[in-house]
Image 1 (cartoon, rainbow, N blue to C red):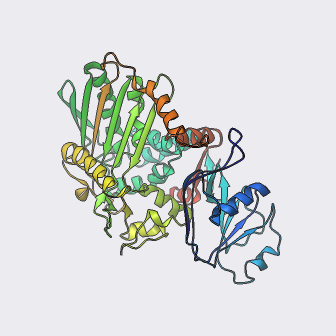
Image 2: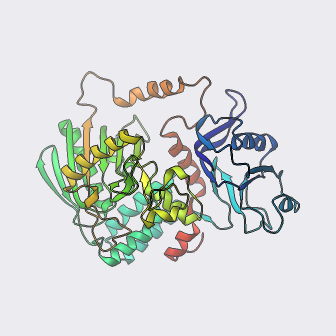
Image 3: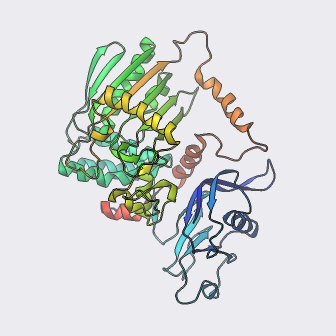
Length: 469
């Protein structure tokens, strides 16, 4: 088994690096053949050396079972010839992972798994696997679908904004692929489409929001707006949200904190999908934690993570694309490592990150966002796909601290440069991007704004949308 996880691979000398892989993930089963084509010769040599374990990446990890003699790395040049299929074994070859720099070549045999290298990451190379959809068009379609399903215009706009923001930042797991589930839940009653979040001020710096079993995004919008404004006025504020549904990516609620120069800490509980260290079964939520640090201008700095080794939506994204996941991401219902993303919905589980330290982090969120804010912890939260007729009942806690009220100190964003340089200084040579948490989102957003969001064709078909235009 060969696994690449969050790998950065560069070519060239310091100061003149060419980034070949940028946070790439790849899983190759034992006995598979790896075919390299469509890259220039230096890139193919570097990729072959990486896959064979002869070189180490600049960042990330490569796990290689050296005893696997069945794997072969073949260099097919710029364009593979017909003879390459004989090299792979004739009429019944082993499965092959194909790494490409551009589009899938004409006549490529369907029996092979085909990946393309786009933006430094491996994506499916099957014709039509994804379609680039302009962000404005994507947002328009989401709003229309929700409105037609019975959601008020304001709620539709809130949900669409959050899903499109996730697509723009490169987190397709929290993007339009969630829409089919939301629509099913509206029909089944798990989302009360007409519900309006109700905010109650307990004190000038503490409020409670009852989401009413409606969409999670409007409730979070109300909570974030109040939290940021109250913190700016009083110095510190907190909002507890209960009776809620899925809220999407927490970083999507960053703008009120940026506007009011408030540092925000946002937490969210979810239904059971992760297993405790060494456990075989999912009994805890892949709870989310997000820190928003307002900047002098432009985007605030955000740290947004789930406590599983990967977000559940990234595994479902792999299922939508028909590709396996790294073994480290998933366990099947018996607790065994698996690369089949469909196992998640067959009773599988996502391991917690960081062992028992990861368990501690998820328990912090359980106590604050679950027990304190939401009135229930993740074992009591309904899973949105498994229980479409039930309000999830998840909780959120938002805490805001005004930078201006901490007198005599530099604003937090003034220290980000020092922290960036501290990370950079830990390398023998200048590190390639990404070497700081926000750089992946920055690079992805620039690409998606230019070329549109890559939406899986399976999702477009499920929604009944045309593939493009």
